Amino acid sequence: KETKVELVDPKTPLPTTDKTGTTNVPVKVTYPDGSSTVVQVPVVVTDTDATANTPAVDPVEEPYGTGKEKTKEAVKKAVTVPDFKPKKDGDKPTVAITSDDKDIPDGTKPGTYHVKVKVTYPDNTTDEVTVDVTIKNKQSDTFEPKVTPVVKPFGKQVTSDDVTGNVTVPNWSKDSKEQPKIELNEPNTKLPDGKTPGNSTVKVKVTYPDGTTDIVDVPVTISDKQSELYPPKADNLEKDNGQKPSDDEIIGKVSVPTWPTNETNKPTYSIAEGDKSKIPTGDKAGKFEVPVTVTYPDGSTTVINVPVTIKAPTPKPQVVTVPKGVEPKPEDSIANKDKFPNGTKFEWDNNGKPDTSKEGNSVKGKVKITIPGSDTPQEVEVTVNVVDPSASEVNVPQGKDLPEAKDVIKDSHDTSKFHNGTTFEWKPEDKPDTNNPGAKNGKIIVTLPGQSPVEVPVTVNVLPKPEANVVNVKVGDNLPDASKGIANKDKFPEGTTFEWKKDAAPKTDKPGTT
Image 1 (tube, rainbow, N blue to C red):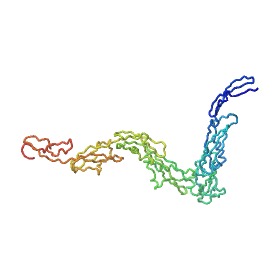
Image 2: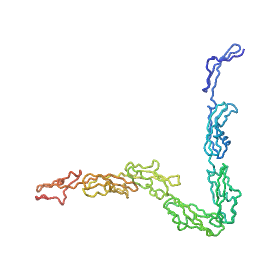
Image 3: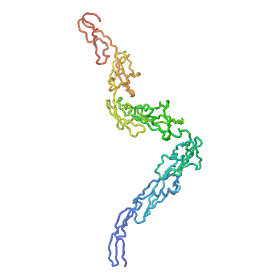
Image 4: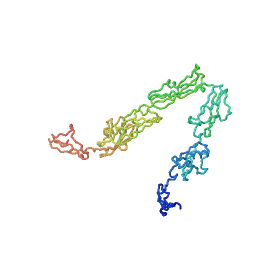
């Protein structure tokens, strides 16, 4: 007899593989002698390779002109499974491109392409990912060669190195392993032999590592003029704000670096009378250019611009007065704003805008000043006064002129509120007419220096002409209250006083009419 192995209960369902974990299954073992035992057989369900791992995908960038096969290899290398743990030696995922071949870039059209890749694991499970492939622009479209003219003295042969050495690619990294190749466009180009003065051009070809090219013209001059053979150089001149540069300071920034040291006669420098108006006064910051004429011993001349920089001044804060609710202009708080260079930005700093919702003096603010070309703004603490112009009621006799507008506005003579230069005027279309009695509405325009006008409403009471009333008094009695002599006294505003004129009060010592 043989040993028999069977499930304890054939009807017991076996573990499924839809969940990971360990499940014990009871198994009965019957030996040839008839004895038996029951053992627990562990069934272990583990993750598939695809479930347990996540592929990593790097984007691919290829130069213009990269062929399909090279791009395919780059795509495959861009997909890895960094945390893959092989169950046995030699196990590793494989990577295959599943996109159609027509969807793989051939390097002739710049842009970004999406290539599908399938990762197959040793257990035959798979993951699908997409690799972004970018074909860069032509290097000839990205970079621009710089050409410096070649100037050779009469009698000197121009060499190919003279020409190609004056062509550079400014933005190309010098540390790059691959550099553009610069050569004559036609290797057998006939170059000027230096025996004939004049100008010509030579074509130079720049070939980039991606195979694209630029062709540029290099101007070549065979010259017998010292002004062309020995070009001048100008350094920048800096002056503090308020300082005007002198002619000598400007001229001192010009030199001819290549002038032969053994020449006893040297170039001279001057500023033409017509160019002296271009010398900055120093009152306003900014960058300026002053032409300087260089005269060589052979009589030839050239003109070079000397860059002059007038530094920005230290900002000087000044108190500004604004009407209530009006946001002041930040530049108005800087007394010397006109001395800053053109393009300077004046703005309120974050959380530095003054609160003008309430009347009061010494409201604080912070102005941020950004000078062109500077990444570091200056911050200046400033003070703003806030005024709320108002007017009292005005009483004007019928037919009389209105008072001066300034005299109607409260505190108008207080220069801490209304600075010198503030104007007050009746608004013409709202100026009350005093020909007829009654309460009239008018407006006064108050204009603070540098601010928009503010209209202040005013109530004008036009008082009627007093009408005399007959007052009867017994001989020898005191005069009654003067108001008894005004028939229309009730037409006057409350608080109006009436009194007899001292030197013209009627006397009651004799009967009669006065």
